[in-house]
Length: 588
Image (cartoon, rainbow, N blue to C red; front, side):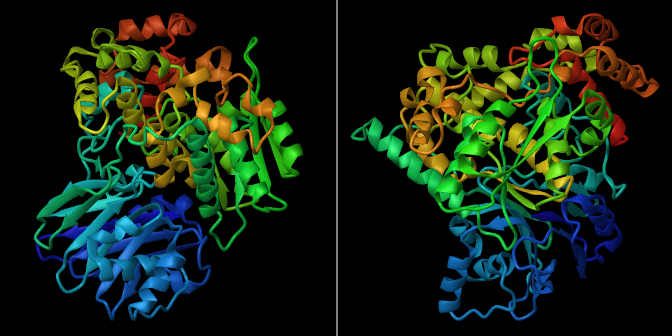
C-alpha cells in the first residue's frame, strides 16, 4: 500500500524529476517508510512506500528489472502473489525479492496485459518498457486503489492522489461543470473519468491504459460482471452456503501480510462477520477498533454496545475511541485536506480520526465497507423490485436533488444539462442487468461504491499510513453476489442472504439489530460551533468570488440548515460547505 506517481513525455525530452518529487512529497502520508525516484529518457517514476509485504529494501520502488527491461511503480497488494510466483518460477523466472511488486513485473513480462486477469487484489500500477518506451497503467476491478491522470504539453502525469498532481504547478484548476452537477445531484459521486477539475481525470476501475512512446493511447475494460441470476436450480440454502464460503475465502486472502492485521469494528453486521470469520479461522489477539461521537438530541453518536458484544464474544483486543465534538470540529479542515476529491459523507471525519488512532498500533486492517452495495442493504433497493420506471425511481430515491433544484442552487453559468440523470439512464441501458433492481445494484457496486465509500476509506486511512482491506469487494465474492436472486438480497430490510450466512458465525443480537450507519450527528444537525465553522468558510471573500452557489439559496440554507436534508439523510448545507472547504484547502 503506497503512493505512486510519474511523468511520461512524448516529445523526446527528458522527464522532469522535480515534478515527480513534488508529487511524491505530497503523498508522504500514503508511504511514510520510504521514497524513490527513477528517471530514464522520457519517463520518470515516483513512489512512497508503506512496508506491508517484504519489509526489506529488496522490494524498494520504483522497481527496475534490467534483465527484463522493465520498471514499475505499484500501489496495493496482490493477495495471490505467492501462487503466481511459483507459477512464474516454473516458467524459469528468477526473483531477487520476496514481495508482490516483483511478481507484478514478471507477470507482465510473461503474460502481457492479460496478467491482470490473474491478480486477486487491489492495485493501481504503471509498468514501463525500456526498449519500446511504452507504458501500461492499470487499476483493480472495483477501483479500490485510485489513479489520477493529467495531460500536460507533450506528456502525461499520473498519481495516486489528485492533490499530488496539483503540486506540479502544471495543471489547470478550472472547475468541471459535469463534475459539479454530479457532486450536487448524484449524491456527491463523480464517476470516472471526471473529477472536480477539468485538467484532471481518473482511470476507471477494471481498466488498462496502454500508452505508446509517441503518446498514442488505447484503453480497455478487462472485467464486467453479469448482474443476472443464471443458476435457477440453486435454492436458498445453496446460496447461503456459497456466500459464507466466499466470505471465508475473501477474509482469509486479506490476512496475507508480513505485519499484524486488525479490524475496524463498527458493531454492524459486516465488520462483525469479518471478526467472527477471522476468529473462526484461528486468529488470536486480534486487535479491533471502534469509534464514537457525541450524541445530538436523541440521535446516538456511537454503536459501542454492539461492538462490545462482538469483542467480548471473540475475545479481541478491543480499542474504543471516543471523540468529542470539539476534537471533531478541530480536525475538519485536516480531514477535508486529506480528500482527493470533495466527499460529503459524515463518516469521513470518523474514518480520519479512527485511522489516526489505529495507525498508532497497526499498519493493516480489514474493513466491512461494500456489503450494503453488494448485498442490497440500503433502503432504496426494495422499491426498485417492482419499478416500472427504473431511471426515474432510482433518481428519486438516491439523488440529492433533481435538475430543477440544481438550477436554483447554482449560478446560471453552471446549470447546463441534466448530466446526472443522463448518466443513470445510460448506465441502466447497458447490457448485463435486466431487472430494475439489478440495474440499481450494478450502478451502486460499480460506480457509487467506487467514488464514495471506497474512496473515503482509501483517502482517510492512507492519510495516516494505514492500509485498509475490504473483503466484501473481493471480485469473486462480488461476482457471486451479482448472481444471487435479488429476492434473497432485499428480503427483510436487505442483506437477507448475508444475514442468514452470518448466523453460523456471529451473535444474533448483531444480525437482527436495527440498521445503523457511522453516526456523526453534529454534521447532520449543524448547530452552534459547527454552524459557525461552516458559515465562516462560506462567507470568505474567495467563496463569494467563485460564483458557484446563488447567494439567495445559500442564505436559505444558513437560516435553517436542519430543514434542508437530502433524501439519504445528509445536510445540504454541509454539502455546499465541503466543496468550498475543499477548494480552499487545495487552493483551487
